[in-house]
Length: 347
Image (cartoon, rainbow, N blue to C red; front, top):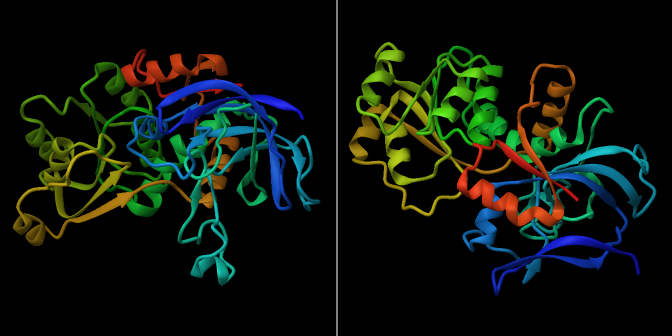
């Protein structure tokens, strides 16, 4: 039986190690993809630290992947071995009300998530449903295509769907790591103005300005609420995005909202949600929205936007490491060494 290298995580012991395991075989309706690149995401850290559960006792992490089709479990019109693809990181459960009614991946009410519910792509090969494949042009580097599948698609979906950002609306973004950096770009793409980016790290603020933010502030500095009010001409923010997922930043973001403002909380937080006195929200009619993930349609839109030059993600890949250095990549992300946007593994 053919084998491959894969990073395997034991949820009981908390151990992550690169092992030789059998190459998976695709069933009908599935594709075997040779992985060219896979990102390291903070969601992966949540899995490794026990903050996000896995359905399997031992699992291969990694859910931001691109590569080439190496095999198909059944003849599939429109797809061939050798096609370059980026992978939507989910599959339909097949049993919920929406799936039984004929809905697809985006409609499933109990969607399975790659690297949490089934094996991911910190490996030489990964098996995914054909429905998860998005074609990538020959001109797009696969390292850049990989980061579209979460690092870019999640903030893009937060802007266009959960946040419903419209042209000329004011936007604040708390946290300028991988997701926050792409939030800046997505907000710029849809015409938000002004875009106010907030992060304690000077390098992160500088990068946000270079990628389209109108202003960059240190959220720990004195007078930040007054400065946001000044930059929005006293109206407050239309939409605030919090990527830090801590009680202090969530409260600061909510307080910066104007009348009918929307607060979008992205990701998983270890903190209890506490936004302050309820009367304030009742008077201002704030809306608080939780956001996680994206639709496959968002990923397809991003592939087109990048291919046509409307969105530039050439600066999104901060480093490319071999699979054997996965622990080093995790360490760099955890320590924010070099202020990375995305560290990518190349199996």
